[in-house]
Image (cartoon, rainbow, N blue to C red):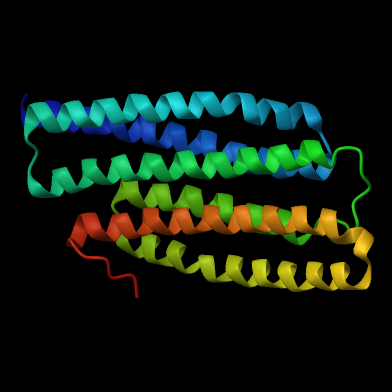
Length: 216
């Protein structure tokens, strides 16, 4: 395989990676939409569509392994392909967190929420945006975008802590609110973990270009 052909195969991997990223981002946003609207049908669709994301992960993994085995790529290309293998694992785990949120939506479908959902949707928007920007930075090999996106996690952590404090107050003031508050804490934790995985993507961008993990 010539260098031109190898580049074309890498571009195909990038396209499939972006497809998987878009599906994951959609799952995250839809999981929160289903929560806000208490939409059981949408929640069930998220759970069902997770299999598509899992299958795409396996397809990309297979192509990466074949490319490594047959082409013996140079150091920087090898780092990129190995990073794609890690990235698809991160995306699959993000999608799993979206599924977990959808499952909570179904459990709470017949309950009146203890408070309007404001901070959780805001947190979800930031997390989904982090996923998109992190993948853009990876494809564009943009170290600065990766570092800027990496720092967005600080804002998500602040919202997570705020939600945690608020819900603990609800639980202390009224034991009847403990179960629902606990579920909302789980949701906030799922979103915080999604942001952490997006951070991992950003770190891979810097690693591919520099061979080191230096985000500061």
